Length: 207
Image (spheres, one colour):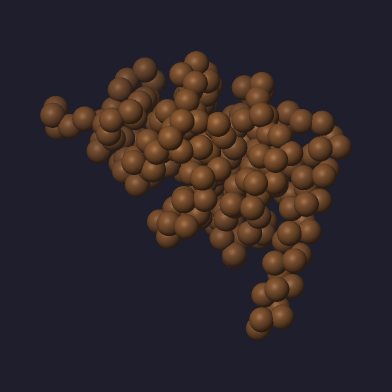
């Protein structure tokens, strides 16, 4: 066990203790969930990690989408948070790859970024479940992650066709385009609802 090391680039933490991924990926008693935080900014990674750990969550961090894909199957997170602009593989392409992999297609995904209209629209297209705009309040981040974890554990799923929240994710139910103006939030929710109705109509016509 002493020779085990985390994959290159992955920072695995719980209450200031570094864990090898092989140990970390097993259930650790007393924790309320596991989050994979993906951001190329080390300060942001640490900020998110600290605030989630204070709520009893375990956190793994990766510096870009490529590292996320390298570790996600070992870590087995309950939620993944993604920045958009990152080297090698950005957050939107990372989300798309996670959605096409049967092992991670129902994994709750949250974009934590500038959340421009483009990012929200593109995120909805690839199946992102929620959005948090930078700069954000730590309480908003914690609430968002906890809601996604609770939704997954209640059986609602994320990104899947059977989700009561629709295949476009939790946007409508949670109102989780956080940190942007009401008008933009309403526009994003309306776009998500229209996309969901169109998809349902397409499935009905093909039945």
